[in-house]
Image (tube, rainbow, N blue to C red; front, side, top):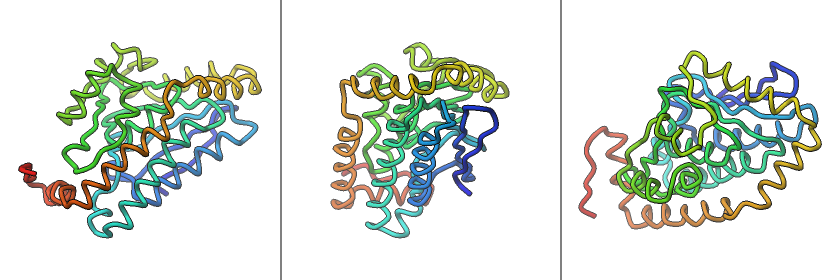
Length: 252
């Protein structure tokens, strides 16, 4: 299963992405991730959720091959699936800790940008390659992780940054060797899980209530431009080039 849920310690639920080769999720995968995050938060025995991944990296975003093969329906589906998954992290009734190793790209940024805390491996990289893929989205979430001008540089150049740089912005709880990532994540999760479950849930609700940006509406606004690029045919060239492993035509 691309997404699974495990409970290995009291009060802590793991939601795990395991979709080789790069954890790029298809439409069904994004909706499954949303469903399992919401279900984990509704479990009265759960006090904190760890969102993590198996394999080479945390998340490489959407399955571009599915979009190119299935067209409009897949694009609409993945837009809605991503919105649902990102919102599920945000709306999860308990705090969510993202545990990030390797690449965290596109949709991965949407997930961790809505998480409550992030622990990263020292090999982790973070980026939005959307401009190179004919899409827009998750600048909303990147803005929660880095300063405004850094977000714009990353958006326009599609260049990733390291965990060390992201740590300097105060966005990461810790940066540890890859082999220590899960242990460090559990160390933080156990601190959270030791608190009153009733108070934790109200604390999450209250933190969301004072958020200065409506992240769900902001992200859906971004997605509108993705569909505009698709309708105009610009996005197809970028996605075809990615699938065919060639340089894209950037004259349009």
